[in-house]
Length: 337
Image (cartoon, rainbow, N blue to C red; front, top):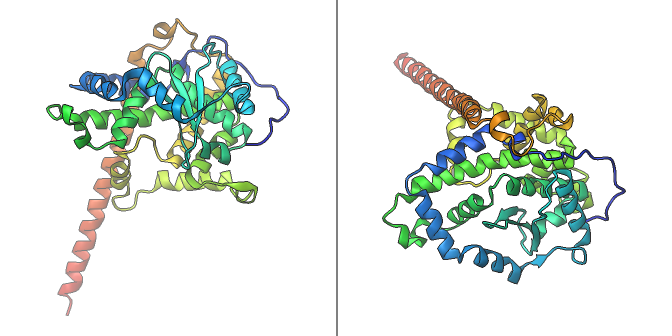
């Protein structure tokens, strides 16, 4: 991790509510998750296996380094700065885990805490770490920690590892958790941008999660514009059954594809939502239901999912039509003398 740069002007957002940045599909997917039969029992049993909040916290207290003024002081400064920017007084505990794979997470129940893998510290500079820390704080402020803890456990273990849940329909619960988990990342990415206040830095985090960039030599050879062009190509790919493959390849993931996240963040900025929040036009805590009722999010999420479904159906239909045309052409050619 680099030394702390000279501070620069950064806007703060007094009393900002998490719904100001939450993706409507995140809120709708979470409500849908809560209605899946058996989800409460799955949560209860998984927490029992983990030993509850105390067991989860002790796992990291015993095998990770707790960050503070005297331990990773630069990281601690960036963490408290993120809390100041998003006006969150209850600074969550922060841990660094010796892990060679890039990741970070918010865990816990009543007192959520944040864990950053050592690989993330090695890959990111201070501006990028600021984005990552605000991203995880966004999960905490949105109340994601409990559900993300369960989603992480369900993604890591096989269904056979939960014999006490054998009588439940665990697979639908697992898929519902993972679908919500992916959408929650889109919300937290927006919080990360609000914390870092630099779209290029936010997209650099996605790029480094996708391709590394360890060391000044390699990091200097990475290009955000080229990465966003790649994101555009992925999003617009509709050849054959590409869309179907995209859906199937993400069903078991807790996070969306990195290019998808970068493109979603770009769309949020292009829609003007980020600038409105920066201007101070956001929902304050305690006014959520009045200023942004859940019904509005369900409507917006319905449009979002309907768009995805239309895109999937269109590409599948087009692929079938092209396959039929090729089959007819091959048959005609076979009939020629």
